[in-house]
Amino acid sequence: SAWAAISWPVQVQVVLRSGQLIAAHALVFPQQSDQDRQINNYAIPVLEQEAVQAQSARVDTVSGATYTSDGYARSLQAALDLAHRS
Image 1 (cartoon, rainbow, N blue to C red):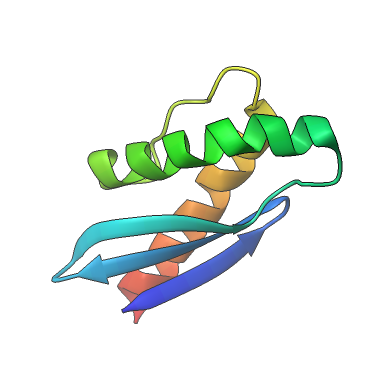
Image 2 (image 1 turned 90 degrees about the horizontal axis):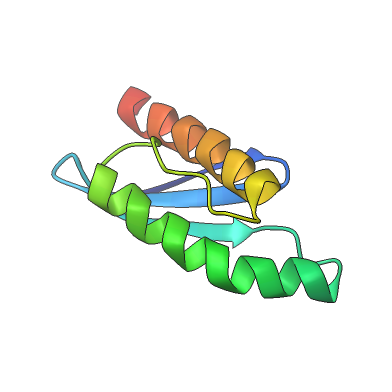
């Protein structure tokens, strides 16, 4: 099953199977400038991989992408909370 939560500037969708986090996709993230796109092309895959490895929203801040990392972690936690309530 999949759940998504919005926490500006990032919206994360989580996919759980048998209670395990198998995917945490950033659906929405900053892309307004070339710099945003460059940073997030690197940061988002790192955050997605860390989330699955950690099985939680306790992901490290990606250097140079603090704004995105913080938004990703907040949205991820909200999506996980929503999933666990369902």
